[in-house]
Structure formats: structure tokens, C-alpha cells
Picture (cartoon, rainbow, N blue to C red):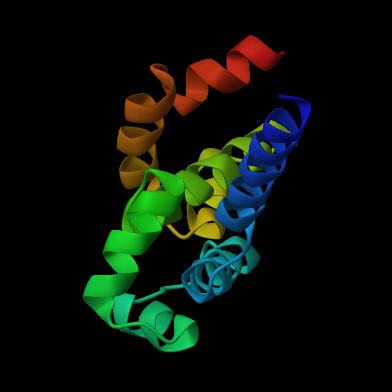
Length: 129
């Protein structure tokens, strides 16, 4: 009985270890995420991300969404919004935060900021004061 319990425990540990082992797809997604994280304001095309990760565009979208819960574009927008929020918290003007965050203009940033946080960037800045 003890031996059987020990064998079952070891088998479970081995299966857990195999599931947590990085796969080539995990490394590919990590490269794409790093590209976005390193320069969220840059214009990252899906083709560029796919080339850097060594996957096709379709594989990248599917595996990126599986790994992060977001498509590469949604992840990029999230990083840009986070960067703009940090700039606003440090006292940057709205237009400067929008430009530095990689948005087309201030209204583009405002629309996405409201969608993400539920308040305008101006209200966010006012709440910090």
C-alpha cells in the first residue's frame, strides 16, 4: 500500500514537472512579449512579432492568446495604456503622454483610457492631486 502511494505521488510530480517545462512555443511567445514590453510605443506589426518569435502570424495569434489571454494587439494596447497612465502619474501633459505612449493623438488615448479604467485621463490626474 505504501509503495503504491509513493509511486502515485512520484507519477503526479513527474506529470506536473512535464506540464511546467518551457516549450519552444512558450519561448517564442516570451520573445514576442519582450518585444512589446521593451518598446510599447513602437509600431509593432504582427509580421514583425511573428518573425521575431519564429512562428507564423496565425500561430502567434493563437498561442499568444492562449498564453496571455490577449491577442498581441490587445496586449500592445494594454502596455501603451499602462505607459500613458504612468506618465500622467508623474505629471506629464495629456498630449505628451499620448505621444510618448504611442497613440495617434490625445483623443485616441482618451478613448482607450476610458475603456480600460472607466474614467478620463484628466479625471485620473485630478484624482491623484
